[in-house]
Length: 470
Picture 1: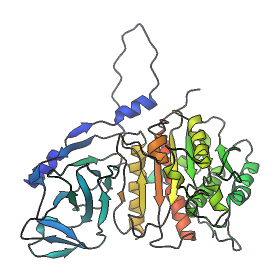
Picture 2: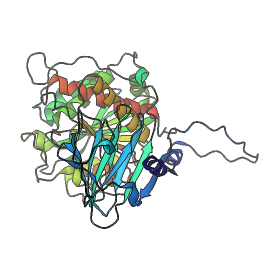
Picture 3: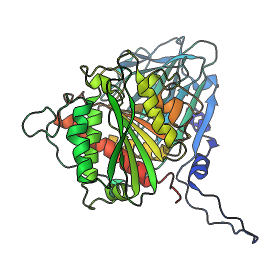
Picture 4: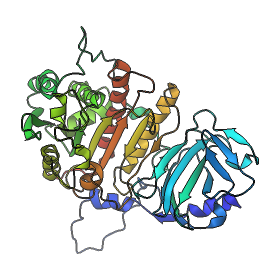
C-alpha cells in the first residue's frame, strides 16, 4: 500500500527542457514552404515527477528520529514521518511547504518500517540527521543515493493539521558515462609559502594578482586581459575581472570566487585551474574545448578588503556580501553586478565557488542551482560523479544532501536574486568542504577543490547552453 502511495507521488509535472529550448535554439528563418517536422532528439532533461502530498495515510505517526536512532512508539507521535525507498541513479528533491515548521531527514540502508515497537535502531554507517527549516520556505533537501536498497525517512514538524510536502525525482544525466571527459589534475605543491610552494594562502588580493594572474597574462597577452570593475567599500583596494578569451570563442562562462574572505582554498583552487588551463596541451578534450572555445570572465577575489585584513568572512562594513544582491548597499556587490549586467542573457553560466567549515552542518559537497535553469543537468551530473569518486577514496561520510532554491524564490543571494532570476544567467553555487579529513589550506584540500571545481567548469562548458551567434 505504501509503495503504491509512493508511486503515485512520482507522477509527471513538467518537462524542464522547455527552458533549454528557449535559451539554446536560434529562431528559424521564415520560409514560404511548409516546414517539415524535425526529427525528435533525445531530451537533455528527463521529467521531474511530483505531486503535493496531503494524504494522511502516507504519513507514519509511530516512527520518528531521536538522536542517532530511529524509534517506533506504541502510540502515535504528535509529528509525522514519511518513509520512501530510493532508486540508485536518481536525484530526489524534498520540499516542505509553508505549514511545515521543521523537517529532519536521514538516509539509511534498511527499511525504517522494519523497526519494532520500543526499538531504538542506530542509523548505521553514514546515517546522519539533517535539519531543514520549512517556515522560511527557502530550503529544499536533495538526496542522491549512493547504492541500491536505501530509504529516506523525513520527520516533519508542522504548524497546522496538514503536512504538505512536495517530492520530485529525476534521473537527469546521472546514467551517462562521464569518465571519458573527467579531468584529473596533476599533483600540486603546497600553498603555505614554504620553499617549493606555488602559492601562499595568506596572500592578499594584490599579491594573488601579482604572483598568479599577472604572470599568466604576461605569458599569454593575446588570451588574458583584465579590467578593474570596482573597489571595496573603503575604496582602498581594486576588484579585478580577468578575461580568458580564445580567438574563436563560442560561449561565455563567468567564474566568481572569494566572496567571503576566509574561503581561501576556493580561490586558490580556481587560480591553479586557470594556470593549468592556460598551459593545457590538448591531451584532454574537455579542457582543450574550454581553452579554445570558451571565454572565461573571472573575478579572483570579490572581498578584497578582507584579504588585506586577516581574511575575515565579511567585508569592512561587516556585511555578508552574498546577502546584498537585492539591497545593493556595498561596492563589492556593485562590482559583481557590473559583470552580470555586461553579460545579461549572454553568458552560459556563472559559477560561484566557496569553501568553509561544514563539520557540523551539512555534507562534504553542498551546492545550489535553480531547477528551472538549463544548467541543471551539468549540476546533477558533476556532483553525482564527484560524490562517487569521493566514495571510492573513502572520503565521503554520507550521500550528498544539498539545499535548493525554489523555482520562484527571489532571494538576496547572488545566485537567487540576480544571476538566473534577474540576469537570465544559469548559475551554480558550490561549497567545497574537506575539513572532515584534511586541514584547511593543505595540499589535499586544495587538490580536491581543484578537481571538483575544474570538472564543474568543464562540464558546464560541454553542455553548451548558450552559443553566441557571430
